[in-house]
Length: 158
Ligand SMILES: [Zn+2]
Image (cartoon, rainbow, N blue to C red):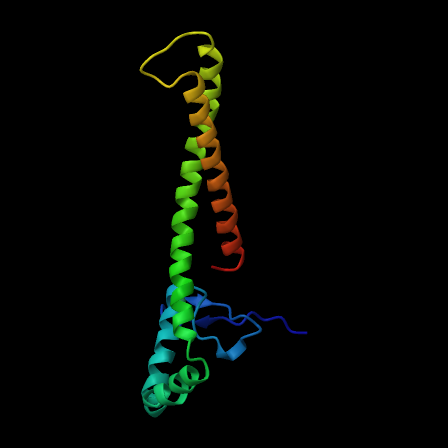
């Protein structure tokens, strides 16, 4: 078998390249993204020039029947997109808040241990500190539930 390497000039940058054997004669650009993108844009432009009537009737031929077949498609798509935005925001917020709350609870545990038997006024101490820690623990549980629900939505692609 003859193994000559066929080289060709790129129609975009004029650089030499070796065509992919799977593409063969059809390959006219080198591997550079800019050249492939420019060639693709040329082909799209040609298609639109030679298929003006297809473009003109696209709305009637494709969009109208699709909307008729799935009347709620657009509403559901918008609903999903809005949910995804909220999920992204809550995911970011939840992560930040959770870390802060966990740090607070950890610190409160240390403070409560040291404050035993000492009368303190003007700051959270004793039972009030314990109640505050309980409330923060509830907040942590709620945020963890929020994180779990957010993860579930992400799994659903939302
Ligand atoms: Zn090129």
